[in-house]
Image (cartoon, rainbow, N blue to C red):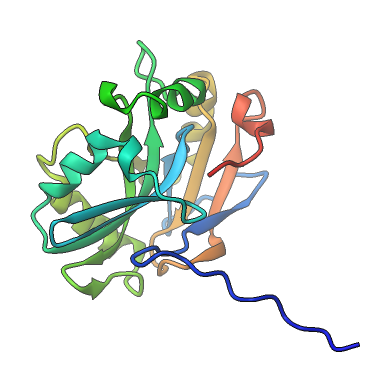
Length: 212
């Protein structure tokens, strides 16, 4: 019998396979690590090319028509083309991301409740930014999103060695956990050892099956 390799997965134009964090049980520390809150939402790769904006899930499914608030803000960014990685979220009255609210909001796009916490810049004005270290990508992303509007917001991060403090703060707020990232490394599609996810064991996301 001849074994045939499976056909390659075909992704839509403009989609970039996202970087996936490696699950960790301890928070990395040291000057080369930064720490971001892990928001409870849908992973989105957002692409603008000229006047066209598209929003993809982590598996390449098209969510563009379901997130008009993100699309409208993306269309106003000061760039001819741009691709961002981030988390599509909806928040409760306390401003905490809530996955069940998000699922409901995606079914009622006219209410414009879903926005993007952007945490990485993959392409800008035709330049592939993935080869650049996180620190360079982050600086350009922050400048790009300055005054962008509420549809696309910069995801906060913490510098320095207080990763444990960031993790305990996230747990106290009932959030999903944190992602520790190496500030000196490029962006890598697929599973990466340079992004470490530490989950809050009490958060609902800890046992949820990944969707999208």
